[in-house]
Length: 179
Image (cartoon, rainbow, N blue to C red; front, side):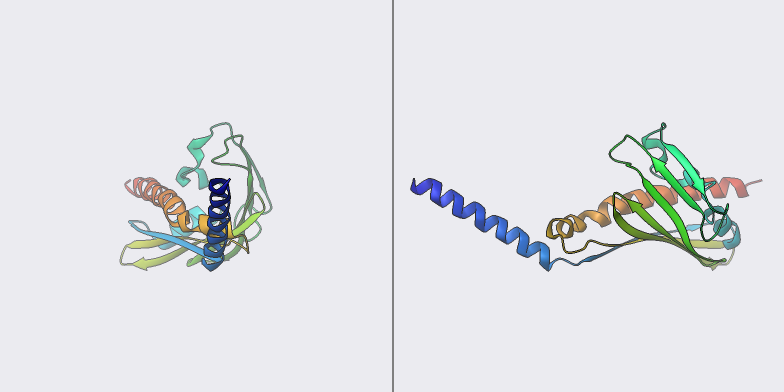
């Protein structure tokens, strides 16, 4: 009986420790990755200011070829919206809507996947005949201590996907400039 009591006290202490650690973690999460692409700033801005070409660069598009996409609002700029429905749990279902479009420097989108709203940004900085593209992610993890602990992994998880997407964007856009 003493062993059971010690195990129970140990488990309760561990749960309390995890909850306390979770509340000590930041509520906000920020991830960003950059790449230099040999293409004009305006051309890159135009390619991303609409969802028409998004899957050419998206690191998630190949996860589920059966994903259903719908588009609403204007074709480009503020109000352009892409919704997707996938049975793949890694992809999920949700929306991506352009909420700010400031040519040729910034595109900001609102993401909503599973009720966890976040924002993504693309910034474009010219440098000679190249452009530095930065893809950012900002989210609020709320007061959930478990989500705050999971937030420690966002830089690795989202960052790896953003690196793949930016590398693909570089490849597609530079091939388009080759001719």
